[in-house]
Length: 264
Image (cartoon, rainbow, N blue to C red; front, side):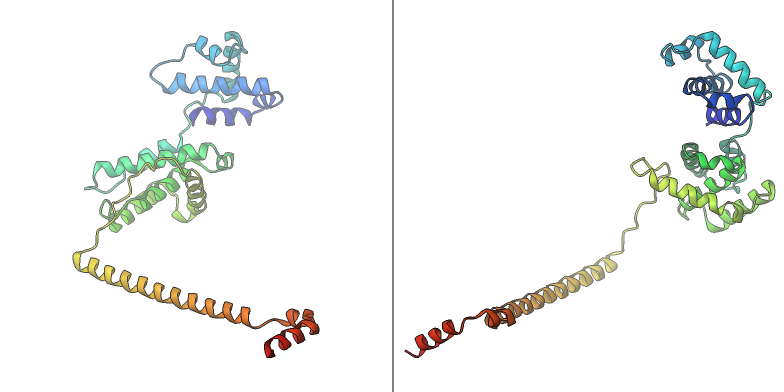
């Protein structure tokens, strides 16, 4: 996400627009921003020769170093812009006292999942990182059961975020909806937040459910038998009574022969 943020910001500058002219320049800019993100935010620096190897030898170390300087000057060395996860981490610290640590971990995990999906959709670039973080947190809260965080704690948590950030919930509803669509499209991935286990009914409720199910199945069987008998009757009537086409195409000679044969 940080590397793509560098790339988007660089391409929006006067110097970076030149990288949109050819595929080779664009790929070089993308690789260099990834290299910068790892270099600044990871504990282990990526060797420049490894970057050359990842580019399959299409770019030399000199080209990557020169592009690195172009990106730094184009961004005016502002390389630590906050990401949605930076805001989300600070917002989660506003959880009311008494909330279990695993609740905060679940919120951050689901928020990170949504932030990663948003990176793949270019239309989310118009939204501020703080609003994207709040929308992701609100969606994460909806995925948590009430026994993990009560309604009163949710209301207090959201109220504290609004007071500290100055962002109202109404202003991020559109982002919430679009994030929900992204999550729905990513069907097949493991859900980052464990869903609550289904509640088993009590024994008395189980007997009631069994009786209701039995009555429903008997009703369906009776209805099916009735439909079957009705269809059979209609079919028999249709076979016995000829339609207008049969009468129209019947030969009088055949009819008279049939009548003569019967009388004889």
